[in-house]
Length: 58
Image (tube, rainbow, N blue to C red; front, side):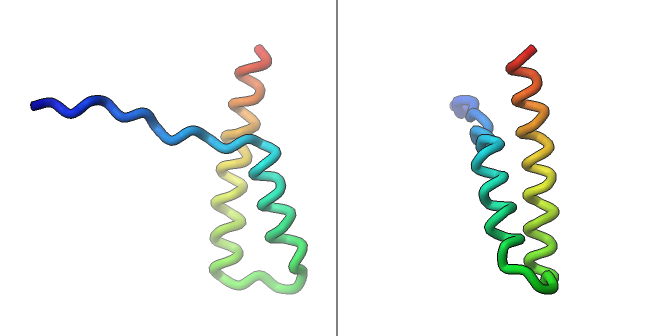
């Protein structure tokens, strides 16, 4: 029996991603490897959210 198609997870809003980035950076000091990796993931997510906002506005 075929499985029903699943919807991709809904992207988080730009504001939510910004908030997480700010919280991550507010700790200050040097970034650990794990923190740097999470920061890079958030930047990718942030860029996707910006593109999504631009597409909605068009």
